[in-house]
Image (cartoon, rainbow, N blue to C red; front, side, top):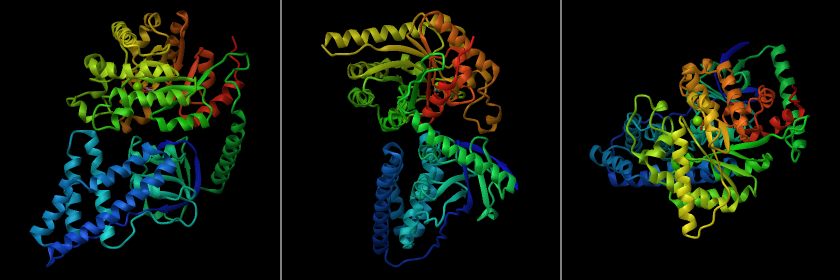
Length: 540
Ligand code: PEP
Ligand code: MG
């Protein structure tokens, strides 16, 4: 038995045979041609086939994983229509009198290098996409179907890397899990894995000799076992069976109150990034939304979302949640979330740089547009607003003044708005240390343990080399959570956690005993946490 470590993308156990997936990288030869016009026609036809495939993939992905995750295929189809890309292919065919395959491969390589060298993270990420689309066209030119082949039996897919197009094409009923050497936890592929509830590991030192061998993915510990021994296999099979039974049993918890044995009610909410996620929130019976990461609306666009666009989205979410609480976080961009139309300078230290509320208080027009949309939507449901990356009392006072201005404007124009709770995220050590003062100013605190861990331990949360010491259970982090709960309660406000730590079932009891009032988790974690809440007694 061999054991390997990787970074877990999705919790869970997968047991099965490995299918070592190798991309059929097509060997492209440079061939002289006589008729450039004919060759361009061949290219145009292959491009049409590729676009038709991408449209089909888009439709499949919308059904399987929702519109937001399917967008990548729309982007690929658009890239194939890009004038610069097409001009490059035509030029190479015409000036060098060469075959379309060679022109597409050369264009793909050139564009890929160009994107990879760009500073903007969004464009950097397009480097892999442009290779992906070029390979698709080359396959169409050769009359080959690139789409990941049919898997005969359920398998664990092991690959160097997986493009989103490959992941989504795999038959979900036959995909037990996947393991890759490359990729990051923020890649589209990782997002798809989580959305599809597939155990997955990245950063594993893979080997093609594993093909057809038995393996186990342990997504909880980030481990891969190849050719596990009988004892390990039996233990994981038993654990997997227990997981399945537990999942079935959890369904019985739908509709039950989130209440401890001694009667403390916990607000058990879910985190979302788009309107499409609301269905998952409702299916898992969350009592509300504790974190709507509104920046994803900005990340998906090529220009600033207008007040009307934002209003429509916030209103839809509020209405669908039918009176349940919806906590919307204002724009939290910067650091790893770069939006090119904001035209921000490159920074030496972006996690500690120009981001989140700092941008909003600097570029008030953007902030006010969002706040107006939020207040208008508040007439249609139970909206609360929270502000990220707070470090000072003066920031909060300024935010409250701006909110008052917005309300006054709306009133003057006869536009309705509802009662809106205002809260702050506690995700910097500074906010923790002044939480006694902040608590006097707001209606609630929501602790962002992802950033709080990063800033408390001085460990970049994006750095995969430091994953093993990025420890949200560090006593410094836990003591801070307790301090925030106490300071919040001293002023009579509710205190929640919306970082990933809220989903950590090993800490649910601890949080309840600390007095935490709200836990906001990925929709899939709502029922497991409900179970623990209902078995917990706060004690003395
Ligand atoms: C956090 O920092 O814990 C948080 C919830 O915000 P994000 O992960 O979006 O930075
Ligand atoms: Mg954060």
